[in-house]
Length: 171
Image 1 (cartoon, helix red, strand yellow):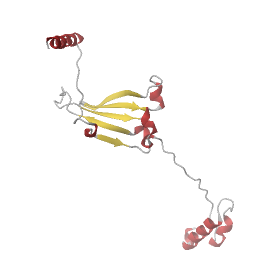
Image 2 (cartoon, helix red, strand yellow; image 1 turned 90 degrees about the vertical axis):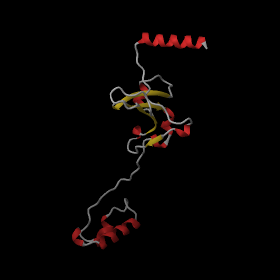
Image 3 (cartoon, rainbow, N blue to C red; image 1 turned 45 degrees about the vertical axis):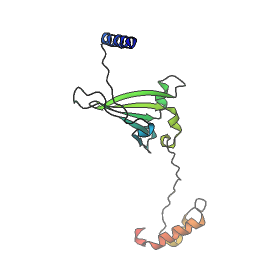
Image 4 (tube, helix red, strand yellow; image 1 turned 90 degrees about the horizontal axis):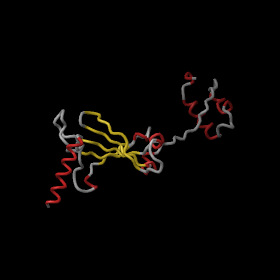
């Protein structure tokens, strides 16, 4: 007991010499993984903006607002540029921390394993080229004005029917 108190006293004295200030930026609520308030943000257009986050609350009171500090930890897949700035073979690393508003923090934790998850992969959009041809004056000539190498007969018939159903004044 006495030895433990001496150790705590020694640690307090070392902190005083250090002149640094430490803050608790927040803590999780609950005691198990299931208690974490996780949020998933998936950006289909740009998967590098996708993340899974947890909220940390009840941190040290803020000097400016007296509200308790809060943090959000965002787990995401690192970009090639971010990987180039760290040691090779790292599979996880803490990135930047920002303060979007007073005493509210966002930290990024990069996990290479997330890069294999579909939500973090760039979507490949497969599309067909569309070739347009001028419509003839008469819908009767439609099948003959379309290059048969580029369109099959069934599609040509469908187009002919569509055109014949429309008002000729549109053409």
